[in-house]
Image (cartoon, rainbow, N blue to C red; front, side, top):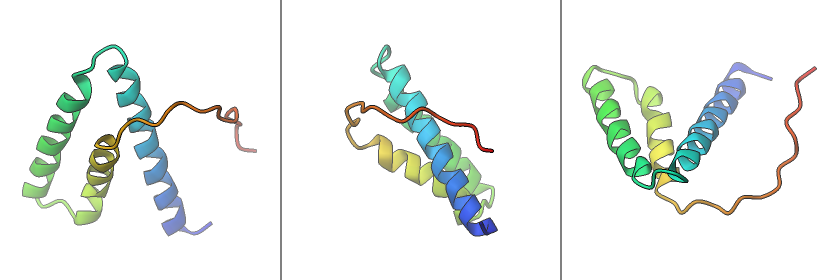
Length: 84
């Protein structure tokens, strides 16, 4: 696996983890998602103002985009396995 692929895989996993966390909190606090997106945008703007590279802001944009979509219904996932 090359470094570029590993980086993209890590970004995807991070975004998925953030989405799981936000959606879970929304189950008991419906306003959490809106507050999270507001804070996400504030932080992204601060980073951009401080000269962050566009690739650094990519995760923020992807998280916001996916949170704007309706939550998918839960589905049965395969159990997580530890890598060898």
